[in-house]
Length: 509
Image (cartoon, rainbow, N blue to C red):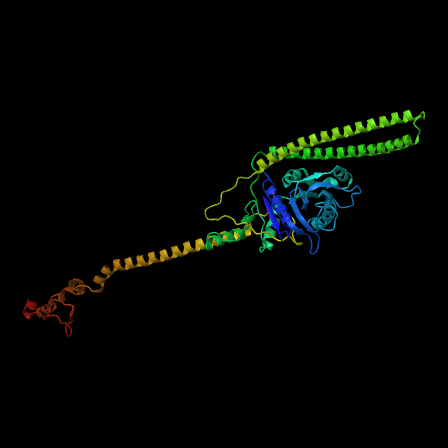
């Protein structure tokens, strides 16, 4: 994914076209890593302006735009301005040529990176530079010799076409530079959040940090809750494929990178030794020619000098042939290594590629985030990827559980209260018919009760009265045999009851 930020646009239309061509070339690169392209960029207020700075996980490059083309010639001393078809090369800043401009900008960029990252995280010697020409260019004979002799020129390259840049970037990667994709993506997001008023030149892939609501109020609230819980920062799954295969390919790629660096070092050392011998031989040939010119033709040692000069010339030619063969062999080996490294890089990208999850119906497509202005407060500090904020998740789950339990308890309480009221009403209805007969006894029942009581009293009086007194007066018996009613149960005779007097005649007999 390529994140591009350009502010303000280039005043020169040629440089603007170069920037757009560069952006298109980087966007068309297959299996490209996360990259951050800053255009018209300055690391401090009032400082020198970078035409472009490209940050990748294993490289940081300074890009210098040259607005013309033609035959490139470099002065012998190297300090003067470069020329294209006899005209001075136009570069930004105060330097005379693109390489001098790169050395000036490299120091400023390295100092700024040290202030943003840990000191020494991206050393200045690991920064790379590229000069991009707007029109086709051919290199004169002194250009290669000049770049070989300048210190630090091994990290600077001249490109006549922007389409060559992706391959050169892969070759210029340094394992010592470690910037993860998550760090670069977070940096791009911070730039977009801090400067929403700027306009993005382009993003080759849609970003996922749009703040616009997609489907109304509730969708926005759900996203806010999801973000509050920290679920937005959950890291991606582990790369698919065999971990052993990925590790093996990565190790092989690292070994090939080391081998390429070693070969480059050996070739550079051999080239320096051959150049030193060639310089000594040139001096020797010049001395011999001067001596030969001073000695008369008929001198006896003239033939010896000519033979020696011919020998030196042949050795020089043989040395040049060996140098050309060595360069051809080095170029061939570099091509083989580059092809192998590119193949391994593609395999590693295939192993590490994650399947794209299709967007759900409730979430709209993410809008392209506007670019941000590149200023001095860009932060490249590593940001750790966080997990779910479990305390917040526990609070939400506890609140939901409490609401559910409260609703269930209230429902049960109301239901039980209704059941108690229904039971009481049913019991009251069942007991009402049984209480009415007890509260109002019938007349027959009272009569039977009184009769039984009278009979019981009569029996008790009969048992306690003597036999002589058991014969009551007829008139009194008649009074006693009056039927009892509920008004009169028993009536005592008035006065004492005296026994009847017996007939005197009966007693005499």
